[in-house]
Length: 308
Image 1 (cartoon, rainbow, N blue to C red):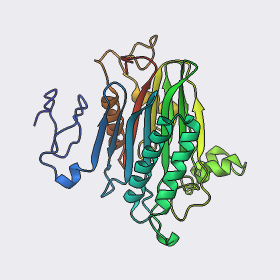
Image 2 (cartoon, rainbow, N blue to C red):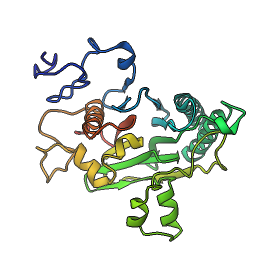
Image 3 (tube, rainbow, N blue to C red):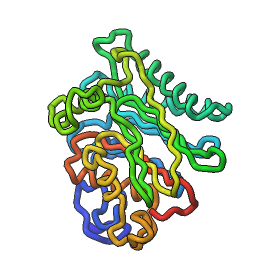
């Protein structure tokens, strides 16, 4: 059958058109399956997409995206599959985190303080889902707030676990977070080289998470001031496992017809929106195997109508 957007051929079970990236109608797919794909579209300002992937029976990720005073806020959470009711943990973390973050920012709190307060409130809410640490729902957590300081754009990131934030800019790309993982722990303590640590089967084991069985909660907060326009990408490991380095993610974002002088985010194949870019990245992860739930938020920073 043809894609309703570009008329290219699509097949039963496809989530997106391979030619144009259009999200296909859930008609012909079970209602429960269609419910495992969610999208938030704030137009040119931002978008987020979450998908079950190809191996999980449910989508255990949570996401929220909303305007806040002076900018936007995103909160993502990845339910720990090995725990009971992981989707309840991630949903609770996102709902609580976004509510507290928005409230704190509306009262004029510094974004760093608001970020930490929201993360701690989310952790407390997740821990409160059970009184038994041996059967505790668990999740990771990350938030991002965009705004300005002294007339310059700033991004405030807060996280617990291994969900990530990346900056993709015209003059350079950067991973803004450090995973709460076994590999990063042993590297930081000089116990192994990066190559040795990531070759170990324990590499991605979490050493920080939310849940009643979690150790003392350590909220990491970073403030980043980009010097040029770019795109903030916030995602769970279901996406970054397929494009872990900033260069790999930038390549996945780039328009292959882009003018290298203008930068990789200024394309010539038609205007790309945050939603279309988020869909492209999810499709890339699905094409790579879709081994986990996939969630990504795309937030252009600095400049209206930024060409993606």
